[in-house]
Image (cartoon, rainbow, N blue to C red; front, side):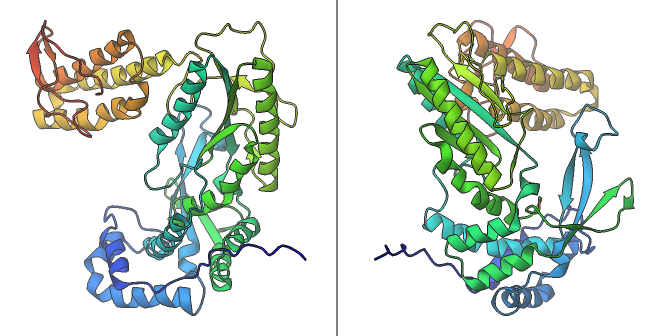
Amino acid sequence: MLPTRPSLPHFSFSQIRSADVLKELQNLDPYKSAGLDNLDPFFLKNYLPKLLPPLLLACSTSLSCRLRFPKIGKQLRSSPSSKGGGDTLDPNCYRPISILPCLSKVFESQVNKQITDHFKSHHTFSAMQSGFRAGHGCTSATLKVLNDILTAIDKKHYCAAVFIDLAKAFDSVNHHILIGRLDSLGFSNDCLAWFTNYFSDRVQCVKSEGLLSGPLAVSMGVPQGSILGPTLFSVYINEVALAAGESLIHLYADDIILYTSGPSLDTVLTTLQASFNAIQLSFRGLQLLLNTSTTKCMLFNQSLPAPARLSNITTLDGSDLEYVDKYLGVWLDCKLSFQTHIKHLQSKVKSRIGFLFRNKASFTHAAKHTLVKLTILPILDFGDVIYKIASNTLLNKLDAVYHSAIRFVTKAPYNILPTIATCTLSLAGPRFILVAKPTGSMSSTRPC
């Protein structure tokens, strides 16, 4: 007798509430550009009372009767934005900025809320998946990985990692595979029919220098700039974590780190290579392409002797991976000193402060205060709980540039230094704050 398949949590669309549609309409940014439907968000917000009943009816009918996504919502306008540097005539040096019709986002938000609530209640996503999930982010993902690495180092173990990057991952999603994934998660036939229609007959136009191209059919990928796109991509890539084998893995959207540790370097690298091979096969099954030029590896060994020659980690096509030091916006070096990261932060902040000082005559005091909060503090604030373990010598370098930013606002002389006392210049709590105090009685202004 064949074993019975365990019952899957069933999902079907529920009734859309008027309050949810109203909330989404009220949250529209009136200054955002209109999509190809030319319906301006400002117009929609100003005519809410008259627009709400027909919109509610359209949303409800889409999910319960017609099982179709509005055709106008499938029309995407994309504009090229330079990545900075490179050949301006090379299309690869640009990233697409996508603009969908506002009503499309209203429709999608109702569906996205229902499926994310379902996924959360049934613990659908892997614990190793941090992308596009409430309560998760770059910082929490990096902290998890860093804690595992530091634990291995404390045991006097070697730890090696592969930082995996995928080429155009969101644009490479196969719709048939994704619908199959939703089916395996217990989505009803009506839901599957709706999502099949959602992906069908999509077109994209490109607008550049005031000119709009003709429509081009889009047969692959999840719509970038959409509400559903990130959630559906997370569903698509979720089971990749199962292929990690004896190694550990963490996913943040299409940024993936694969890592393992142990007392023997040869064993560590052999295990990592086997897991990397399995992950690549998993990608091939999803029709995702590994970006070999940006997939890197690293060996962490704070106190252990560095090997004379490292065995290469290779891709399935035989390419050797280069050893580097960056993960999710935080520069990691093999000794976890954060010297590279802090040097990068220092350089970035210095260039911005230099620009502000050169143009200080153009700003009022209030404008200076706002500029520092918006352009300087976010740089120092991002990932501060991660790099705070760096040495005092390195952290003092950040103190110096931070003091320069405060002097830009206060015009304080160089014999007056800021210290922690009152929260008058704070971005996200009492971590970076402003008050002047004479030299000699300064306490640290670094993240606390």
